[in-house]
Structures are given as structure tokens and as C-alpha cells.
Image (cartoon, rainbow, N blue to C red):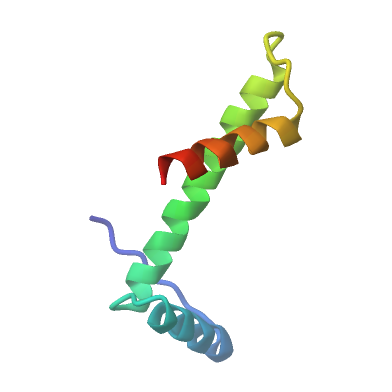
Length: 77
């Protein structure tokens, strides 16, 4: 595992600490790592959506794609 050092303004550090505590993370570092994972997942999703929507095979609008995703998630729960 690689260690990254991050300097934050006091108010931003306090906010991050509050968020980490509120969401049940043991440390701000664990919370930040989770945020980075979420950003990577969002980036991967963006890329996949762009690829699909730009393909000639795509017949759905963006709204329809997201409606399908929501429907799949609600059926999986």
C-alpha cells in the first residue's frame, strides 16, 4: 500500500473528520480512500456510458439507460 500525505486547510480537515465520523469510518484516511474508490467507480461508469452511447448499437437515451440501472438495482435488493 502506498502512503499519500495531504495538507488541508483547518476548516476542510474538520469537515472531513465530521464526515468520516458521521459515516462510521475509523479514520479520515479510510474515509478519503473510500471517496477515491467512489470517484474511480464514477469515472469508470462515465467511460462505459460514453462508450455505449457513442456506439452505433445504442438505441436508448441517457435517461433510459439510467432508468434501466435503477430498475436492476431495485430488483437486486
